[in-house]
Image 1 (cartoon, helix red, strand yellow):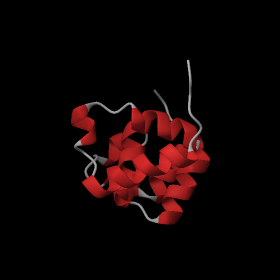
Image 2 (cartoon, rainbow, N blue to C red):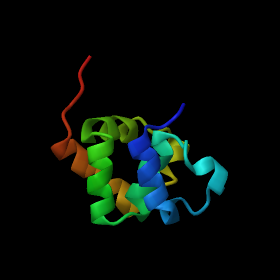
Image 3 (cartoon, rainbow, N blue to C red):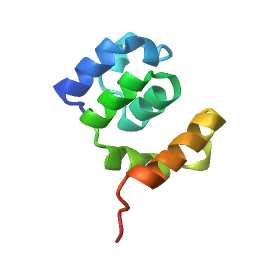
Image 4 (cartoon, rainbow, N blue to C red):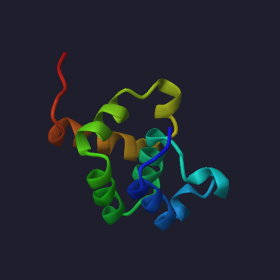
Length: 95
């Protein structure tokens, strides 16, 4: 999957958030990894920008569908905060 130019620019501008990814692979990292890195290590402005690039409902859907191992990649307080945040502010997707 190739990221949009806006996402590529965001990754480039926030390269330090993806410190553990080799430079040549950063441009096309997954949305899951972008979300994890920004929520764990980003500042409030970074999170706001993330919600403009990947809307809050999509971020919430990805976050709420994490597998157990992926949940462990989040700091416990970050996971708890955003679980509560998305429950309050993201629209519920029903089938």
